[in-house]
Amino acid sequence: MAKHELKIKSEHFMNVVKGIKKAEIRYNDRNYKVGDFLVLHEIDGHGNRTGNQCDVIISHILDDAEYLRDGYVMLSIGVMSMFVLQNEATSDEQ
Image 1 (cartoon, helix red, strand yellow):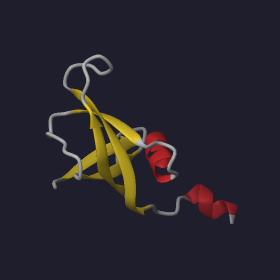
Image 2 (cartoon, rainbow, N blue to C red; image 1 turned 135 degrees about the vertical axis):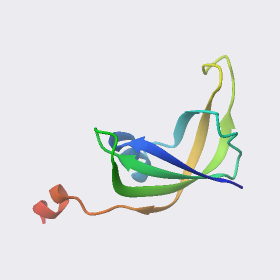
Image 3 (cartoon, helix red, strand yellow; image 1 turned 90 degrees about the vertical axis):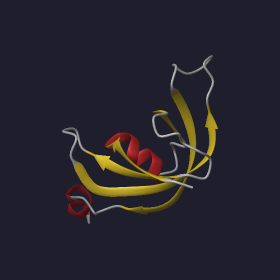
Image 4 (cartoon, rainbow, N blue to C red; image 1 turned 30 degrees about the horizontal axis):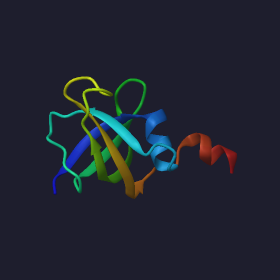
């Protein structure tokens, strides 16, 4: 089992953390396998890491040219752990 460090946009990151987003489409340049771990690092609109991360495990891989562009796979994921910093908007509401 391998560990892959990946960047993910904020809107997609939050949906993974909330359990709404359960799949990720990625170019398969890393030879992903079922059981591999993805460390998803949230990035802001400028491409900078926010410090938030979520560790997920790959439970299924769809590699089908009928549904995906050549070289891309859909990774079904399950959240294992997360580290989310409290943002200013959240602390202002309390």
